[in-house]
Length: 339
Image 1 (cartoon, one colour):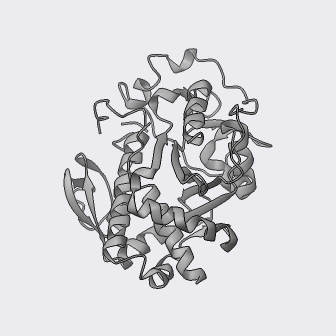
Image 2: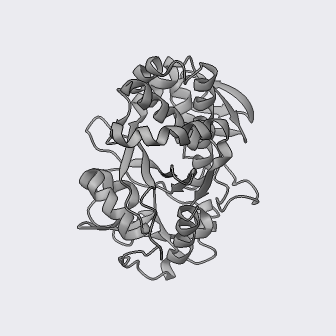
Image 3: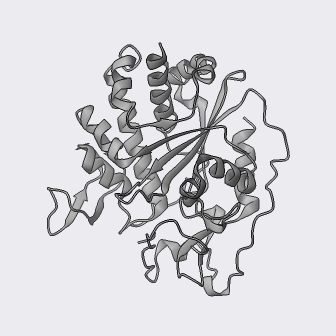
């Protein structure tokens, strides 16, 4: 029974992420072109890519030159302005890029909020490069909090900067991701736009791979490259591609009769997902999960996008980050959590 319930939870969470955020600031804008992409303590040696003139990172700063921007200051505790319902469950969905030296960042960050009493759900996506105040650490990218202090520190970081303390999390790494896709026999991804970027896949030509708009069949490594590729694209574009890949995984699961084959599918996921969600929390959510299966529009989708941030270069390190425009970010949080 526990295996069945956990499998339904995983499939449901994939469903929750399968559609592009309806409140994403890129909606109704022209597609982003295919270049874009910390101060204080840094848990990993990873460096941001250089920004070239005219890149998306310069454009998203709304014309404000980074060298004239004021230095970021720690955020006072964000205030939603209302109490969240006691029945609401907030789950962080985290994608980790854990490396051989055990260092990692959570480069995919989404919060799924479920209220089984009201029958509502919302999904918020957070850019990995948001430069926020991390308790006990200082100003850092939001995707470093999990390594600095695990989920407890990530909880406090969200409470401080976004006004909500998520109770639960689910975390996967890209090795587990490729295994899941390959176990499913690959996935069929509908790409909205062409993508050409550097890659080390077997199909590379001169160390470059190209995906054309339309339907594409991906194995695990190709799906991972497509979702994570960033040398020629923006992080906002990468978010779209990650959504396309998640959509394809969900569609493949459903084509395999995911609900009735839950115990079998659970075995595909159990070594790839780390979570603190107990059985007693999952059971009351099952009726809402079934409603979401039948009507995906129940999940209201949001994202912190280009209109909610400005670009900033950290003077000490030269790292390129995104400063949240606090009023705009909190407007999204309030709308998403007042469903």
